[in-house]
Length: 418
Ligand code: PMP
Image (cartoon, rainbow, N blue to C red; front, side):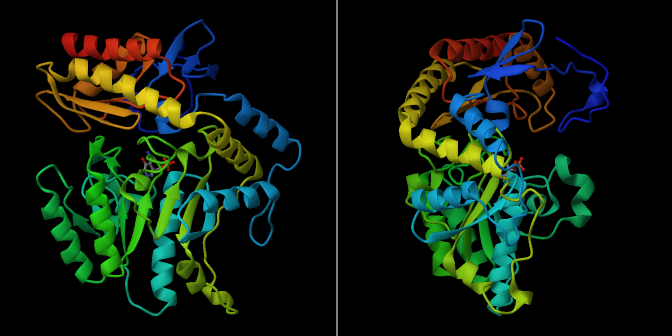
């Protein structure tokens, strides 16, 4: 393991703890390799992005090919084939009411775009609606707007004065679903602009799962009150929850959808925000003052779009769903073996994601257990990054039974020894 002094300031990393920072040279499938013959199983898909596996040959080839044709193009008033075919295909595979595709480059920016679209819609049709409703314990990214609609805590305390006020709906814990739905209904009666939600599972909030019928019910409450329904599928999209999109399981058609992470198979940054036609139409005019004022330099970068097109081709041509189903089954079997452990609570699985909580004297993001567990796994060739005392496994879909056995073996050992 290399720990070369470096000027790099890493995200979500406390440099003061002096923990080793492995330097990875290459990756393939579910594995990461350094230059010294060490390897790690990437059990969290490098922050939930890698779906089919690292360096999938078709995605790599698409990136190589596109880089020789067109590297970058201003996207304001200009276009290119990779973006056009990607947008058309995204509209084809998502429900019919979603007709428009706006590009950006990260999950956070796709959320910012979604919020701006929602407020732009109400503003342009002349209704004074600006309040956003959120689900308690949500995470939608780390830009100021995305933090505003996410859980408030130690990770955004310093910026609290900049965060805008939102309406928070309680999380629909088992047995308390109706309470959450009633709270949403009451809040919707106050004519907010939109409700943003992570469908079926709250990721960074601790892999908190709730049932499809609750998602469907939340959607119909919003529809009843004309509140725009934003599905943040940044983490849940591209098969993570067992179906291509989590909303599919609930038969839910959102007004706005955010996609990123697995959009390019996890190879290169790209995001999209899809929306229904009336939102686009509200900005459509011969008046330039009504255009949608959002852009970033790399909007719809052609190389990233080519990678996303390759991802969509993989979904079309390869048995992706079968890989997801197999992974889900194996995850289930391992989780079941640990479920009765006296230190394990709340074992849960949704699609390819399996999670459990370790009972510990302290919990939450700053649980003392977290760095010890992370180091334990790192020393055993596994990249896992528990969220507080919640351990979760969210590997690429190519991860084999043997690798999964190693991951779960390390988890079992960690619970017994730490
Ligand atoms: N929304 C959700 C649900 C997420 O899980 C994340 C990232 N973990 C984001 C948004 C932000 O994505 P990014 O890190 O690409 O900005």
